[in-house]
Image (cartoon, rainbow over all chains, first blue to last red; front, side, top):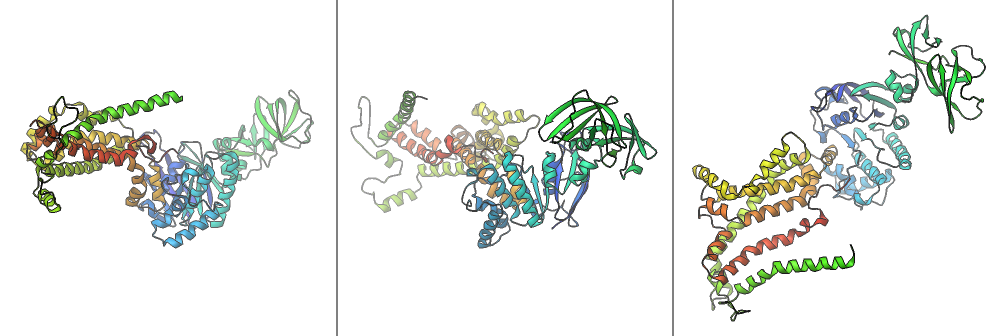
Length: 351
Length: 287
């Protein structure tokens, strides 16, 4: 149970023309499961490596339970990292791998054996203790690596792309295992991923990082409903962006005046951008909506199983709408349609 | 590969081995014979006279346990040279590996400007004839007081050895993932234990091969020992050379056997690292 504060963290590499990590501030509460999300090369793994001590930051501080980590050597930080390719020590068997951290602490051999057994049961891999890492499948190696990391009760657990090397069906299984174990042991956990879906499914909170800069740090739900900027919205599958101007508690846009109920109205700039998720747009052939209803033309209809996607042109602006395929009205390309943007579902951003 | 080709390959290997071993057999017979001259196919008389003259086997009549001990304790030149060669070989092997380890790590893991130039300078002693640099080196060694002593000989042996050791060990690190070390650190291992438990097992096979090269290059070094040692540091190659020029074939054969025996022994014990299947380069395998 440990809380981690990252303050004004900056790190540059000579080979890069911008800082790899640029002034990142994060407060991670005890027991939280946090995702660092961003495209590859955005600096998320660099932050992990600074928390473990492989890299020293240029400036800023990393504080674990009110104590700066920067002067503490890696092995004494209580921060354990599971690397993307597991890195099980090839010259040791599974038991020796899992017991490594306790052996380093000088724990009695009988206690180590006992703990190793418990950990292997926790990751649902009893009876493989005498095998060498080479004899294990990728999924098994991943679990052994997890058991090895958790055996010494780390204060912080860091997972670098924990699911990216696994097959699709193993990925679901492993994801559930990580969540179960994390909730059971209540260890503060940070994992790095470039997969937005993975972050949403696993994390309590997501830190979105682009080009070394923290974009936002909030719950997965907020990224969908209340994104902070266009980049963040796009990363989470946002496609509809409408330029808007403030106007009498409403927003005036190219397609007409939009009623807005978002709580951030007073913080909005004069110029801003409206977004709405495709699944929140409603369509009707007859104009049976009260407000925020605009006349448009269907450009294309794409059936994709459970959902059907429509592209609609409203006043030269293209909007995308996704409706459940069940019980749909008969809408075809080139039909005239009324598009409804529910005022409680639209969100405006300062950009 | 089809079966016939395989068979031909195996015969070719046998033939090669036979060609290599044939002179050794002749050597062996020669060392235990008395006046084996052309056109005799086998020597007329077997004898230990060469070994007696090398003071390794006592004269007839004194061949008791005490006789052997007494003879060897009198410090014959061959044993002195053998011990010198062995100790110089081991010392320069250890020193060269200690020097090469950090260099090889940097060359194997990092890319930087002038890396190729640095590698070229490092391997240049293998292209340069030893006589070219040792004469110049000798002048400096004399003024520094390294000439004609054990230390100077060790130092000069490092010149031809370092390229082999650095290049072999660079190969290990080209195949090496330093993340393993960092993984061990985050699991609570300090730097020393990380080196002993993680790094060393990974680089050990390649290190054995490098050590083998180092020892054998030092073991067979004649010219450098001769010039820098100034005749005061007697090693086996020097003794072999001077014996061979004395013109007694049995004696030359006997001392040559002593010369090649340790080398064969070392090769025998390290051959499993040299052969491909254990992976001479080591590392952490494919991940």
